[in-house]
Length: 282
Image 1 (tube, rainbow, N blue to C red):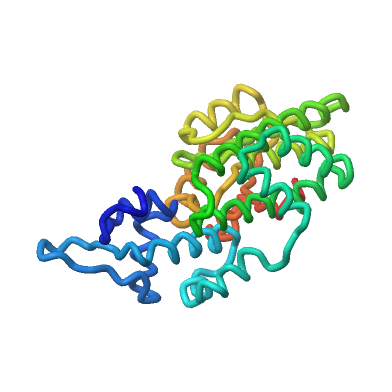
Image 2 (image 1 turned 90 degrees about the vertical axis):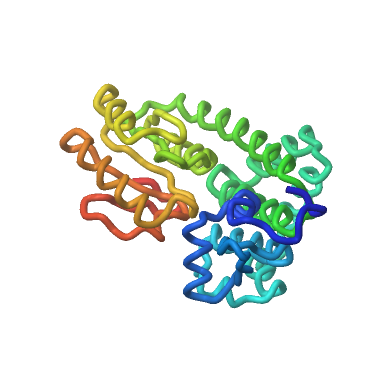
């Protein structure tokens, strides 16, 4: 959908443009009064294009872990402050390379940051805030989805290479890393794998968007000690909780089930499922 498109958008258009689910948008309508749809004579909802920009900023703020009640009531200026509370010169330099689609420059700057900071501070002070910066720029329309995809690919390449370097150390245990059906965010998995490998714990990356039965079958075949599931904000809530309960029932006896990522804190606790905090792997 381009900016020159129709003034009124369907809920499908809104979901495609923002990454928000239809259920979440309707919850915001009922609970907070925004967005307020236009009702067509047919009874169908349509949303104003003018609300799309605000919704994209809101989606980024929620993805960073800010409370929906705060996000919905915030002005555009307040949302920008939530998204980027302070300027990060290293990240801004990287962002300029992203905007120019200069992959050589991006890789050089990332390597420099890793060398100077070490892997953990690199992820916390460079990778995570860079993704936030790119997300905000996408939300305000200053870059396109192609920029976001490009930086994701560059980061994934770098994290894979770094993870393999840590495999030189003797490994202890085995952790299976994956995401649930419908969840296609891969960077969280790679960062968790890196954190485990840095501590001498071997990982197997099963990948994204997997049926629960397939995850459990792989856990049995590989005889893993733990299964760690990465949850983005889009995969949180009651449907995710039910999938996790199903997965827990299917796992072999003694196999731990762990969840991490921004969606983990927004999914109600399930007995026997442990939560990881940031890069503090378990």
